[in-house]
Image (cartoon, rainbow, N blue to C red):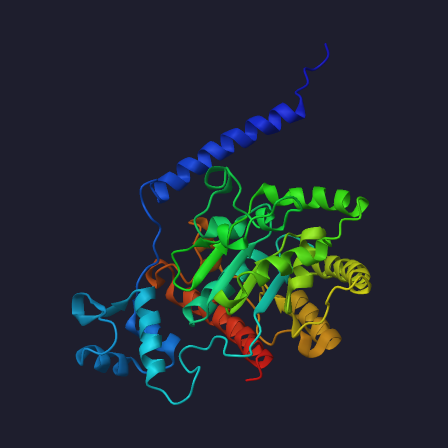
Amino acid sequence: MAQDRTRIDILIGDHAERLSERLQAHRAQLFPPDARRTLRKFTSGEVAELLGVKDAYLRKLSLEGKGPSPETRAGGRRYYSPEDIQALREYLESGTKSPGTYLPGRREGDHLQVITVINFKGGSGKTTTSAHLAQKLALDGYRVLGIDLDPQASLSALHGFQPEFDLLDGGTLYDAIRYDDPVPLSQVVQKTYFTNLDLVPGNLDLMEFEHDTPRALAQRDDNLFFTRVGSALAEIETDYDVVVIDCPPQLGFLTMSALSAATSVLVTVHPQMLDVMSMCQFLLMTSNLLGVVAEAGGDMSYDWMRYLITRYEPGDGPQNQMVSFMRSMFGENVLNHTVLKSTAISDAGLTKQTLYEVEKGQFNRATYERAMESLNAVNSEIEELIQQAWGR
């Protein structure tokens, strides 16, 4: 007797529907429909570290009634909201003779920093890197726009957006870069629960750009595909200091347009042989395709390009060999610091949060502090590159 066969499209559709329902129920449990996702308050010690001052100085300001008033909890512990942190930055900046000490963003003449985070291979930590970088820059006082250019929309999910429920009528970057009747980019920018951080979420609509562009090229459309992202960003340039673009794990028209708009490029790499081999193919393809874009008039000059080692395990011998190999090959183009593989980062992701959002008490203290030190070191190194690009 012949075995009954199931049509794959029906099976996949059924699985997708069931999974979507379960994810929606999970989200409703974590964040009820009538609830607004908020960010936790930060201890005075955390705020002092963010601002580069002593905790005792913040206590003195509080006692003197200067700056925002923190929330006082048991034992006299002081907690600041993200809005309080920004207000403290503005208060301290107003009293300093060194501009940019507490508000380190753009000054007159500084160009918008557009950082594209890319890799050809999934699982390299691209989205995790993008999210932690954007959030840390926001906490440090920069005006940040995150753009989710990946149709899988993981960056959006980390910030509370579930595409199949929240973006039923569009609302992605595709709306602003499509060839027919694009909308102003400002119409798809969403506020997040992070002070200083806005987001352009993503969903499957972004794939339409990959389908539309060949038709536009065949019709010799004057609106060159690689100028689309840059032109959209030009509309809101004065509103931000830094844009962080989480690119899809493929070298399509979206990624190439993002690379054309970029001022800086960050390539995430998991230090395993197969991942590095994949990256080699990615670099070869990128070089060839962007060479064609440059010949067509695209601006392929960058302030900096760096490789970031992610999910690094210092006790892994083969990984250490691969890191040494990359440093010998690419020198200063490899960031000095690495993102360690950590259960703290992955556990935070289970609740769609980053390490900057969760409370330290939810984790083993040593595990948390080790992961946080790793992330802060990487993000501080990138912040230094941003400042250098502005001539500081």
